[in-house]
Image (cartoon, rainbow, N blue to C red; front, side, top):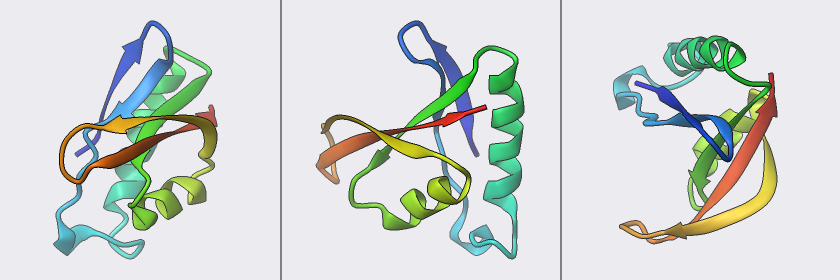
Length: 93
């Protein structure tokens, strides 16, 4: 699953990302298809798509980078387990 909402400050934001482990990976293509759908929606309401990713999630970071997202330098605390920081990434649409 993947969802999105429009933030007054940030524009379109990607949220709620989860793919069952049995369907993860490039071969399955589930995350790629879901992201394309969210990006199609985001183009109707903004010029960029933002997301927050936990700093200790290299697999997600690699996925987002592969799709053109870059770190913005903005971070904020992740206030529930696993604690740490969320890093903002953004992509021009």
